[in-house]
Image 1 (cartoon, rainbow, N blue to C red):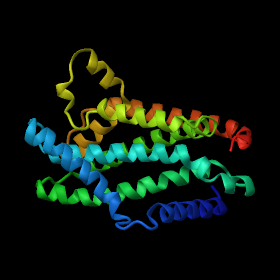
Image 2 (image 1 turned 180 degrees about the horizontal axis):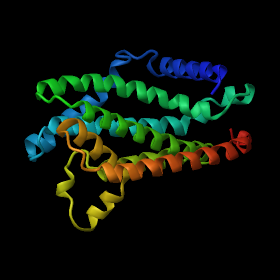
Image 3 (image 1 turned 90 degrees about the vertical axis):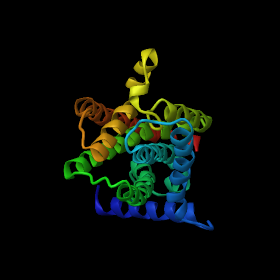
Image 4 (image 1 turned 30 degrees about the vertical axis):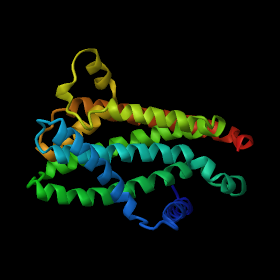
Length: 253
């Protein structure tokens, strides 16, 4: 990526950020408030009402919600990126994948501020992550980000052609939330349903990230590395598909 591409990427990020929080009463605070509100409701239901045996459940739940929201935001922003930039794309010649990448940077920024807030919860629960645990946690975020971008390359093209994909993707992400052990531990899942949960890549990525930073355990390293390789492979395939398809969709804008 040359300097012009980097400058354009930065402008896309600035524009998306301004448009998203312009004329908003609480503005950027919504970035932090949304996961905290989700956390509060689910913590009350699953911890106080239903009960849970998960150690440091508040951290377990909060990080699960933050990472899921991050993945959701990367894919949703990526899906909408081409249509949002269609006026520019029809007038200016630039590498189109920059529009997809630029849309995902907002999700990274939002995650960064959410994680800063999570530090308060670590302090309150008297949990001090190890250096290795933090590194593995960051690796989990990287894998999740690569997977989100890879999916975005595909669905951004499909969304230009099929506008119903927005509603379908909302349902997919809703189902994925409950097929991922975010509010419940993996140990509670048994039988055939466990096979479905285990086939979900988010299960392994989130479990790997949370176990590393909260408990200092690295139980899912092997399966996470497999998902990392698969994510890289999917990223390459998605990029190839995107580059071949982007030249043919101008008439669909």
